[in-house]
Length: 324
Image (cartoon, rainbow, N blue to C red; front, side):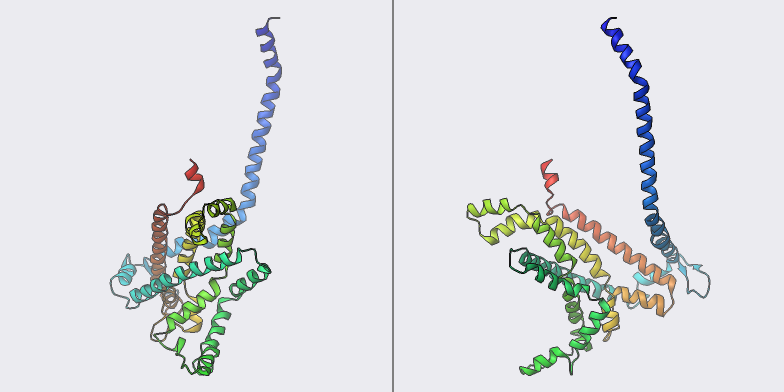
């Protein structure tokens, strides 16, 4: 038998086995895909029923007049016109206060979390204990922390003003004064946020920085500050970007502390956008208009996220992209 004939016979002999293996692999792949969908189905069903469905319903109700007691009545863009063009006297002020709050809290929160993460990234004795202590305020529920800080900020017998009085300083009215209510809520937010997940994420990012780079820079004479700004900061820029996005969204959603501690006062000094939405929906029972407010808030968050993503291309360093 020639060499070509032997090769042909070998192919004919192995072909059935090859086809069987191919069919078996295809069947196994389909089975794995089916299992994947089955395992994911609880999340998919929950997302459709409790997230996507309500979002679509809210989008529709934003174009209606709806007060629960009667069926929705289609009114077109009247709700959006009321919000955007002066029909609601509290819309723009509440949105402005929300942005004022976010512009202050987000940078301070990021800077504070990064500073603590840098401190806890050192090889110090008992660092695990300090990590736990810094994380504890985040574990306190927002309502409980608001009540706690209400007592601390109490003008007459609160712990802070009592301490200030002991050194001859008259403390402010804190949450009871329109001038200091907003900064007081910022203090409450930063107390719970600086040592929370943002700090943990920064700590994880810092531990991913190769120590060899710092050693090489140190041998070349670079000081600690120089190494931080030229090595550490660029390498953790993706972590900073992630925390920035999460921080902006969280700050824009500020609600619980203001609702518990100030009820939006005094004199609407802490009347934030989500508080206005809550008041409209569950106090005034204007579900159609509240749905329009929710749609506007969704558009604002998505727009800011897209802008941040586009701007991040100028300052966020991705090692994988640089390697390509």
